[in-house]
Image (cartoon, rainbow, N blue to C red):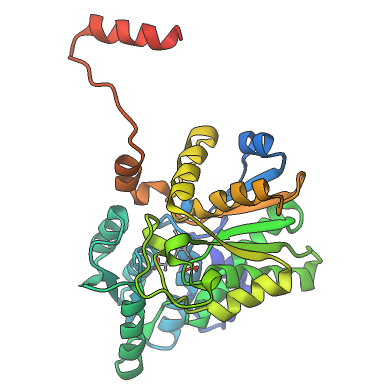
Length: 353
Ligand code: F0G
């Protein structure tokens, strides 16, 4: 059966009306991959929700299709967002499809190359500021109050409505909720959306509830530290956020589920980034790998018991940020002359090892 996209598929669970346009780039329905090698190593049953398989390469498409469809329904001609990159790519793509304007405000020099290329290609109006994501979000919140432009950051309630559908899919793919849902935390919208989704699906289908394990980057760990971070810093630029907008919703998800929110260091993130690609053939962007880094950390500490069924959300595609992969991991390539004998000899050496 052809997948119809999120709004058509989950209509009965979403705040849509007959007037909501049938906008879609066929987002959703992303794979849940059993990470069999890591599962064996860790003594748990570990699965990854591959959100990088969405049309613009991140989970943001789920929320954005809803936010843009509702903006259209309300007659809006322009949308605006602050972004560390993925939200802006999704906003630009859905605005392009819908035939409206997207204005994006991003921190200069701190958006991964692939994401910037996407916003450019989808034809967004791009504003770079000499500030961070939190500054940009403050600005667009103010602008949207005074100008005829719809704010599509996750403070727009339709964003979380769309994003909650990932929890439905996890339950359907796994035959129920996992014991633990591990997820990166930046602006804290996604952890809040998943928790909402798990609760709603459980009400209707008795799919059970997971413990929510959220992971912030150490240099941007406002929730863990209990205070906003003025100058957040991390290699995982997608979650380089010092004052999460959905802070209290994330804490509620943690507390209601009996879960935890912890931080992972840049070295832990990069280690998980590499390990995931090398042992499972899954290339997810650095911020996504905060979930895997967190699982490794929490298995080690004993907070994730042996035998647990764990789903790690891989929020964005690794191809979004090739620069970090190449520059941070110091992986050497072998450069040889264009000479068949030399190349053959070298490869024979590799194969015989
Ligand atoms: N992973 C990736 C790849 C992201 O792009 C983001 C957020 C997160 C995790 C964190 O999700 O904010 O809901 O807690 N990116 C936003 C953006 C901020 O602008 O693209 P969150």
